[in-house]
Amino acid sequence: MAATTTASRVAPARPAVPARRPARSALLFWALALALVVPVWAGTHFPTEDGPAHAHWTAVYRDLGDSASAWAPYLERSVRWNAPNLSYFALQYALTAALEPHAAQKLIVTLLLLAWAGATALLARAASGRLGLGAFAALLLLHSWILYSGFLSFLIGVPVLVLSVALLLDVEARRERGDAVAARTALLALPGVVAYYSHIVTGALFVALLLLGALYFARRDARHAGALLAAALPTCLLGASYVLGSPFGEGGAVWATFGDTVKRFVGLAFWRGFAARDAGFFLSLGLVGVTLLALCAGAVRARRRGEGSRAVDFVLLGALCLAALYFVAPRRVGEGSLIRERIQLVMWAVLLPALGAGLPRRARQGVAAAIALLAAWQLADFTLRARRFDAQVAGVLAQARGAIPAGAVFRFPQRYEDSQFERSWVGPLVELGSDVALHRRAVLVGAHHPLTPFYWVRYRPGADSAATLTATIEERRAATGRGSLTLVVRPAGRAAPAP
Image (cartoon, rainbow, N blue to C red):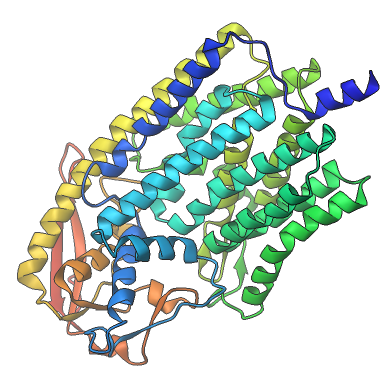
């Protein structure tokens, strides 16, 4: 009897449900996941901050393989074997052998979002045995502020982390049943390597996950604890080889004020997505806050009633650790920014799939309605805004044909505060000079990414002085809030007129 009780605490709780309900839940889950991919394909140019730069500089990297490349006098390849952002670069480089750069990037984003949905479903089943409301709420994270910031390599690491938690819970459930798990434990090293090559933050969080797993599940089993730590070793060695080279760029760690840290945590900064600063966004923010609070309250209620499991408890503990890490993490380290926001996004991505239990019937209905309403708002608002953005970008590129000759060398000193589109939280204009360069086959100098020590191309000395033109983009906004973009091109050295 004692053995049975222990196993029931480790294995996920599996409530008795009609056979049709899991299939219906899975159908609804994947229908929602596929629907949320629609904004990605709303136009040719998916609106992100860093996305245009990544597409352009990957194309430049490919061209630099030709010794006669027009970019060779200004740039050189700079891929390092241990750089922790190679996952996106490798995918973009491979796909652009057959696809146009923007189509390749949208395909990567699509696969990323669907992989995230799949990992969410696996974690939900590993933790609670079913697709609960928390798994559906987790889909609302797909269109995060981080996505529209263009941190695509980091985002590849998020579903890898979610999958890693699911795999760890599966290993522990099998171990409690008496199954051999040595091979499965060793295979945990594979997602760790992928997490590292996505971003240094996801690599570090993977190591922390296995350390927490060793302390929680295997503190009385030294052999299994050692196996979990051994699975983290390749990621640790990769991280050490990179960090010891001082690779983060100029400046050290910078912390924000405690008030700002609390404001962004309570204000769910990840929720901004491609939204504008308008009433619709703030209403949605309030609704998503109430939804997340209700799901967390349900988890506490279920635990008090003894309806949880060690799997769910582990996820809750991990989320609490991530929340604590958020409050002590720096705002930026060198050239790496939004460290806290990345940690908060991972926290919810790991926590939500395990939630959904403990809610009274009316509360469940209310949460389900809120999730549906929020997803509909994201789908409609972001799709329409992405279509308007794409139309304006097409206009900018048409203007560039008459203003920037093919092969010209130009700078694009776009200020971030002038880079928002229709009052968006993100600044999708900040790297749009990369799109101009890509379409005009012109040389962009003085850009941000090739100046960082961890990127796949870098400038040769003196490249910036070769610029003959300077380009910026201005937005004129109508009374309705709709934006109109204009490309402004001047000879290099001529100052812009005062606003």
